[in-house]
Picture 1 (cartoon, one colour):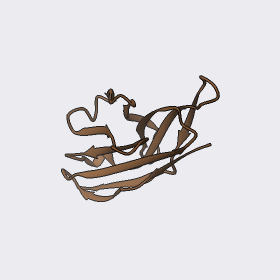
Picture 2 (tube, rainbow, N blue to C red):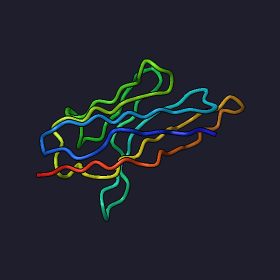
Picture 3 (spheres, rainbow, N blue to C red):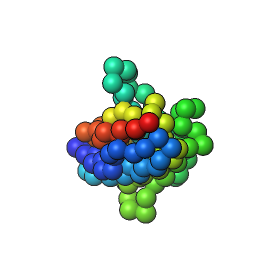
Picture 4 (cartoon, one colour):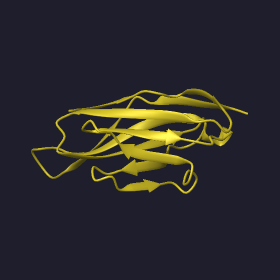
Length: 120
């Protein structure tokens, strides 16, 4: 089993910054870590991912403002959000696409979510 633990989140003024760390634990051979978000009344959407090698991918809506990176500790990462807009208010979920030691199958895991509120 794999667990993803998020921290960060909270209230920030429009134009402000926020940092969202996430740590994965469990039986992990490799993991692509990422963030998704779900605003009230909307579907969950992709925000960004980062591979174990540091390759990143971003949603067009956050390019140039958000930066995702792997931490120095194994299976950790952080999303640095800058110039937050009211449209960025949502519950942010940490995601892990995990390959375990026993097979090559990829399993999807989710954190419990952390609320980001942006005041205008």
